Length: 130
Image (cartoon, rainbow, N blue to C red; front, top):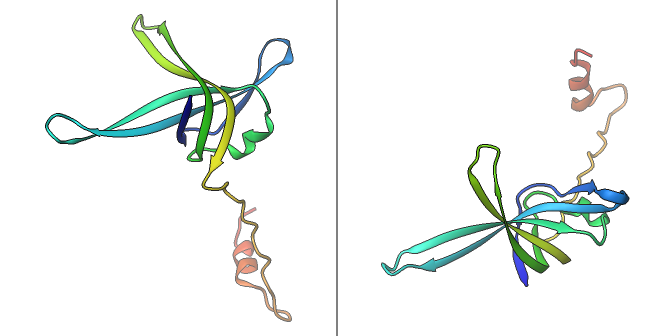
């Protein structure tokens, strides 16, 4: 099964039994349809995802990233601490494709100074209390 959606939080690497690692993240998919009255209905589905193959992709899986996932989905149900029943969808991910690029960290450009004069950035730094 394939799903396309956006990450709802940054991916997290967890260590489980026998020093195995798993990458956990959550994806939201959006769908829309027209009901009998002809009104457009938006529907969002959330998947809790697990990826066991490579932890290196964790850096690229940040909140808001658009991904296409291949894998299998399964439902889970449990009773919460408050006694209320809960349900959710898990997605055992076997392949991850990133769409729309990855956020790039922008380095701050060095400020230029002229002979004996401080740049605006240096003047601001002089006003810091520490």
